Image 1: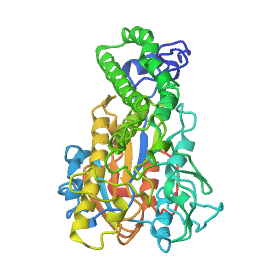
Image 2 (image 1 turned 135 degrees about the vertical axis):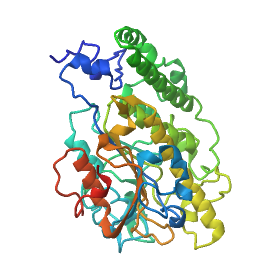
Image 3 (image 1 turned 30 degrees about the vertical axis):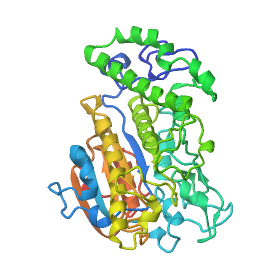
Image 4 (image 1 turned 120 degrees about the vertical axis):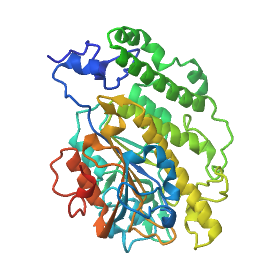
Length: 448
């Protein structure tokens, strides 16, 4: 018999406090209490995007199969190599003939033609894969999906190419004509996951009590009913929630800080309270919020844009880098620019590796949270200097619940659509889909 809302093992009503409710991670005790709950935890998917492509010679491994050596840009993956599939040779044919960026970014998750327009008649060609999955899972989780970013949506017209700049700010599309709003403020993401708490003013934020203080008594009561392993998991989860909360609250209380190196181009007075002023902190807390969202099963679908396309973000916070990512991606085959470009590529991979390591550190069922994930990480072009939408830099993290043959480099030939990867992921999730976007079939090489 299913528990009622008062049962402490009902995930959606657990640990209620004053106006908030905190979900819990997947526990053995939870499965036993439900009785008829599934024997394995659910699959999660995430799509993480970075702009401006990569320096291909330092990205693509020279060998294929499971014995390949990590390339210079991919060396941060060393600790999670067995959990990642490196994919090369995947293409987006519908991005040929468009501008340098916008016709490639907007269809990163749709694979379909982007309408050239300066007005309101926008079209990404179709629904994005994350939203396809979210709509298929609607009702399974409190939130259908999370769409995250670090920079606000840019509107207006890029007169150089005749495209609306809106296309460079979105990868998630509910339909061809309707992008999904992304959230750049970690505070608001936290509130969506765990309930409201902070006010916009720093004075009121000072008096705000931690979420866990509201629910502490419920947490103690529940903890006594758990087995030893689940007690450890619960403590670890609550500590993670509190850590993220404290970092966000610090950003709320210190809005007056100077911009971090590399962020001088941003209009700091327009940055809302709760957004870290250091880009590195911003990325880190967004990724940690994604971990908590998956761990608590608040949602099973996330997307994150590291930056908008054609962003002016400067990466001078990295040793040896003194310019913006976009500028350096137009390297003109100059060695001094290529070196800086590659350092930025490597930094992006470091963030991805850290995210995977965090997922891998969390036990779930008979494996880890990462085992129950499929995490796409990549860009909408290969070499940023050529704006080439072929041979895209794509990594796939996780084992898809045992469906994916992780720990290998697979190189495709002959214009294989990126959407074939998305269709393969749908099949791995057990979803009955015969096609997605411009797919021509699945990628059997990556399936067990």
